[in-house]
Amino acid sequence: MRTLLKLLLLSLVIAGALLWDATRMLAAPMPMGGEVRFEVPPGTSFTGVTERLAQQRLLPATRAAFYVRVYARVKNLDAQIKSGEYRLPAGTSLTGLVGLLVSGRTVLYEVRLIEGWTFAQALDVIRQHPHVAQTLAPDADGAAAMAALGLSNLHPEGRLFPDTYRFERGTPDLTILRRAIEMQQRVLEQEWANRAQGLPYATPEQALVMASIVEKETGLESERRQIAGVFVRRLRLGMRLQTDPTVIYGLGQTFDGNIRLRDLRADTPYNTYTRDGLPPTPICLPGRASIHAALHPEDGDTLFFVSRGDGSHVFSATLDEHNAAVRRYQLGKP
Image 1 (cartoon, one colour):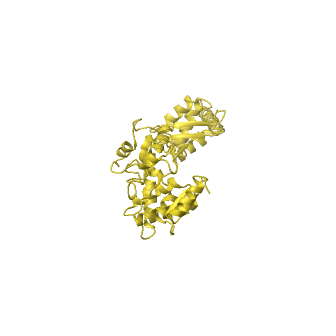
Image 2: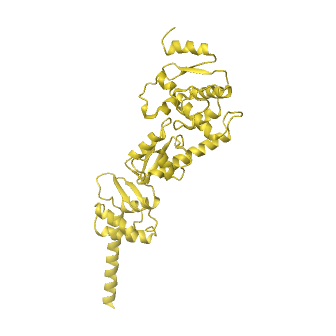
Image 3: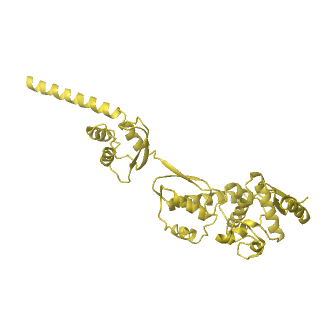
C-alpha cells in the first residue's frame, strides 16, 4: 500500500512538473528576433503546422511541439486552423499563434487599379504583382482574360472598377479580375437605376462609354458633370463628340504622345472627329464619379471646352467663343 502511495505521489509530481513546463513554454515568447511571416499551406494538418514551426526554428524546445498539439486538441482548435500567410509579431507565444491561426487573420496584399487606366494597364499591374498567382499566359490580352472568365461576349475595356483590392498571397489573377468586373457591374447598375431622365443612352453600356470619355477629359471633380453635359448636348443635336482621348485610344500603340492633324483625320471606330455618336466601347476604366456624371450631366448651353493648361477648362456656348478661348489658352494670343 505504501508503495502504491509513493507511485501515486510520484505520478502527481511528474504530472505537475509537466503541466508547469507546458504552461510556461506555451505562454513564453517564441524564439524570433523580430516579426516573422508564417505560412500554412491549404490542407495542412495541425501536426504539419508544428513541423513547419520546427523547420523555421520557432519552437523553444522539441517537446513544445507535443505540448502545443495537446493544447490545440484539448481546446478543440486543431481542426479549426485556416490556411494562409500570417504575420507573427515579436513576442508571440504558441497559444497566441494557435489563436491567430484559428482567427484566419492572414496577411493581405493589395493591388490598386487607377481611374483612367486601360484594361491592358490594369492587367499588367496584376501580372507584375509578386504575390498574385498567375494563371493567364504571359502574352494573354484582354480578350483572352475575358474568355478565361467565361465572359468572351463582353469587350474588356471599361469593365474593371478602379479601386484598391486586397487579397491573400497566392490569389489567382482571375479572382482579382472577377472581383473588379463584378464591382464595376454593381456600380453601373446602381447608378443606372438612379439616372436622370431623357438621357441619350439606350443601355447602361453606352453610359459606361460616356463615363470613360469624361474620365479621360478631366481629373477635376467639379468639371465632370460639365464635361458630360457638353457631350450629351452634342449627342442630342447630332454633333460629333470630337474628343481627342477617343482618337488616341483608336490609334493604339502607334500613338507617340503627340496628337496631330493627321491623327484627327485617321478614321478608326474610335475617331469621334470622323464618326458620329459614341465610340463602340469604353476607352478606359471609369470610376464611380465619372459614371455618376455621365448619368447626371449638368444642364446648360455649352457645346465646347478647351484646356487652360492647368488641368481646368474653359466652356463655351458658341464656336466664336470657343475659338477665342483656343487662341488665348492654346495659342497664347490675346
